[in-house]
Amino acid sequence: MSSGASLVGRPVSHRRESRSGQGPQWLITFADLAAVLVAFFVLMFAMSEVDTDRWNGAVDALDREFDVSREMERAKPLAQVNITQLLAEDGLDLGYLRRVLAGHISDQPVLAGATLRESEDSLVVTLPAGLLFESGGARISDQGRESIFVLAGALSRIENNIEVIGHADPRLIDDVSFDTNWELSLARAASVARAMTANGISRPIRIVGAGASRFDEIDPELPMERRLALARRVDIVVRDRLGALR
Image (tube, rainbow, N blue to C red; front, side, top):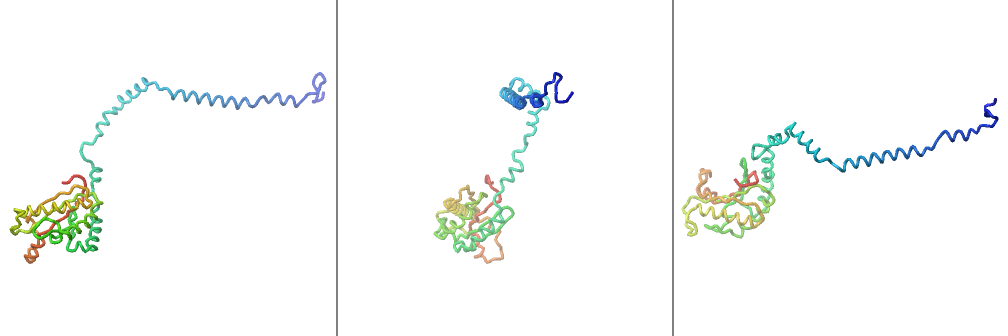
C-alpha cells in the first residue's frame, strides 16, 4: 500500500489534515486579554472599598504592640530652644559687615570723623557729636542727617539687632533743655534712632543714654580737650544676633 492512499483507496488530503490540526489561534490571545481585564477590575474593586472596622482594628493592634503614641510623647524636646533654632538666630557675619561699613566710611566725605571697631559680639560705629548735632543740643544738623542717611542705607538690609548709645562729657551742662548729661545723651541717642528709622531701618532700635559714665574708658594719656571731644559721641552698635533685643 502506498503512503499516499487510504484504506479504501481514496487519496489522503495532507492540506486539509494540516489545517484541522492547528485550531483557531486568535482564541488564545483573546483569553489572555480577558484574564488580564478581569484581574484589573477585581483589583480596582478591592481598592475602592476599605473595611473601616478592620482597618481601625489593625491600627489599634499596632499601637498596643509598639506603643507608638507614648514613643511620640517621649520624643518631644524638653528644652524650649534647640540648637537649630539658636543657629537660625545668628545675624549677618560681622566680619563681612565691617568690610561693607569700612568702605562706606572711607568713601563718603559726610562720614569724615566716624570710626569703626569690632568687639567680641558687636560692631561699633562711633559718630562724634560735632558731626551730628548743633552745639549743646540734641537737634540733628543738616550734615548729621546726611551722615545718618548714608549709614542707614548700609544697615537697612540686615536683620541684626541695633542699639544706639549716646555719650556726654563729665562737665556740668549749661543747656536749659536738659538737667543732666544723662538726659542729653539719651535725647541724642533717641534723635539718631529716629533718623535711622526714617531712613529705612525697619527693625526696633534700642536707645541707651550713657551720660559720662564711660569717660574713664578714654585714654587718660590724651590731652583733656581731646578726651572731652571723644566723650561727646553716639555709638551705633550692631550685634551679632537677631531676634528679640536683649
